[in-house]
Image (tube, rainbow, N blue to C red; front, side, top):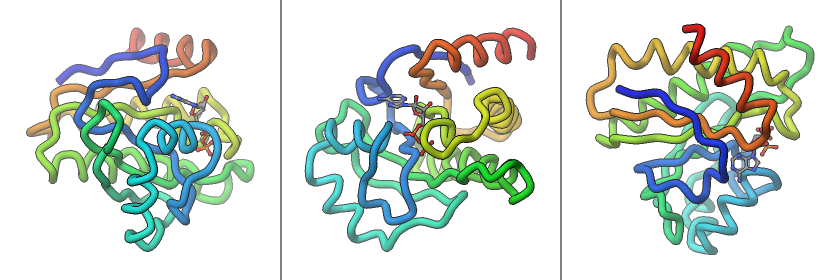
Length: 168
Ligand code: ADP
């Protein structure tokens, strides 16, 4: 099992699943969500409409359609309210539930964006520490998964993840 960084656009990755930082409705939005829907094409929205939304911290899977990725795992990150509203547990659940779903489907590779750190306002360093610790913990139970990629779209996130992966 390998953990690695990618500095580019998550929609360009050839992996078994990319994770979408979605909204509860699963009907599309801005940021990475918008980029994924644009790259996947309109059939992704059609499948999302059948899923009945998604609660914060949970995850649902669809096909990848026009993406190079075979699947999209949609998870809903918490909105940052200062840290006293269960944000850390909910963010950890996003990573854990996405990884479990990937394992249930027998997937070999998965790429995560920096969930909640855009419009949802989660501090980047704290969010990255949760992402890396949950994924590291998971590596000991992993069966099918061989590679987890952290897609860092901005330089600040890239530097934070680089440090975390070097230190641990
Ligand atoms: P949230 O609502 O969960 O905060 P956003 O989409 O606003 O979601 O931001 C989450 C993260 O995704 C941010 O760090 C943002 O820089 C990053 N991001 C935006 N577009 C892309 C992309 N195409 N590939 C990878 N990461 C992206």
